[in-house]
Amino acid sequence: MNARAPERILYTKPSITELETRYAADAAATGWGAKCYDYIIRFEDLFRTHIGTGFAIATSSCTGAMHMGLAALGIGPGDEVILADTNWIATAAPIHHLGATPVMVDIDPVSWCLDPTKVEQAITPRTRAIIATHIYGNLCDMDALEAIASRHNIPVIEDAAEAIGSAFRDGRRAGARGAFGTFSFHGTKTVTTGEGGMFVTNDEALFNHVLTLSNHGRAKTQTKQFWPDMVGFKYKMSNVQAAIGCGQMERIDALIARKRAIFGRYRDHIDAIEGVQLNPEPSGTVNGAWMPTAVFDRSLGIEREVIQTAFSAANIDARVFFHPLSSLPMFTPRPDNVHAWDIPTRAINLPSYHDMTDADIARVTAVVRELVDAANQRKHNQLKGSAA
Image (cartoon, rainbow, N blue to C red; front, side, top):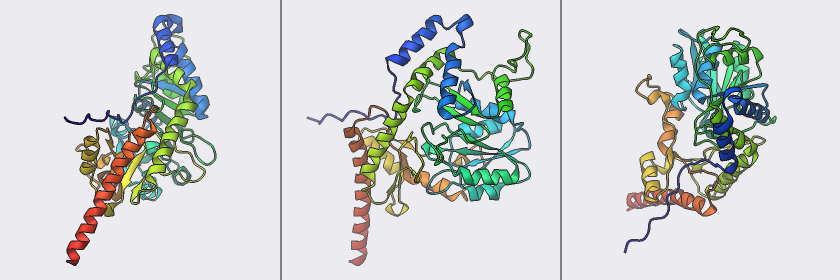
């Protein structure tokens, strides 16, 4: 008789309680007419207070928030925007949609985020902005990026889609430092509304411009009915989604704490495995730990496909590290972005969701250990063969 396969461990899933379902049901039942924005306004207020910015606009996606923010900065044809080659395409797509050119540079091998040295080298007279993506909850070197931006009089934008819960040494949260910040509430994220995003800023003029863009170009101060002041977008969040978001924000400290606890348990296991690097957390900073990620040392010779096969055999979902944007068919290859092209070939995103158990985490890390042990055994056998 075949042994029963262990229950599948998913790579992520949301934490939804009676609170969120009650708010969503209320929005569906009563959130119409004069009340159609009630939960949206409340969600925006809760979020900007948590992040520490003056203004927030709930959007249908993080991509939409980025698109409108870039548009409000006047970015368009002929302009260049610098971003890390390690990114999801959602960060580059709005640049393309606006007719500007995404300039992809290499990442720092420790943080996996934008390398400030490469940013400085990539700046030209056409550079209009730098997008700092806090990948997997890891923090960009904002001090260095802001210094570069100040010297060249260009803004730094924070793509904090994956960084809810991350904070800098000075206590400021990811997303609160740039000209504007964007967040994602996709179903995989620490805080979710199913789909959705948020635009945040401390710049009131920029806020008002994006607010107008978000509603077909109709300014909040416009008194004429159905009178757009400019050509805008339709990137608004629904009241029902925002109701779910309100419930999530009331639980946000617990949601972040649980993600960090899972990250801590992974570190307890993986720190004991030589040759594997987890997400960094420099002294004094906080990593929101959205997606614990294991990078295997190059000397082990463990390739992405082997990692995927091992996790699949153990009935565990594990996501590949983002492919470099410049390796995708719609962009020009940039293999000179060495780290962005190398790290994904030997890395994996580990499962992380709020009700993971210690036993689940032990199962995941057992696969990591088995991969390393097998690699070390192969090296040992090769050395023995060479000596024979």
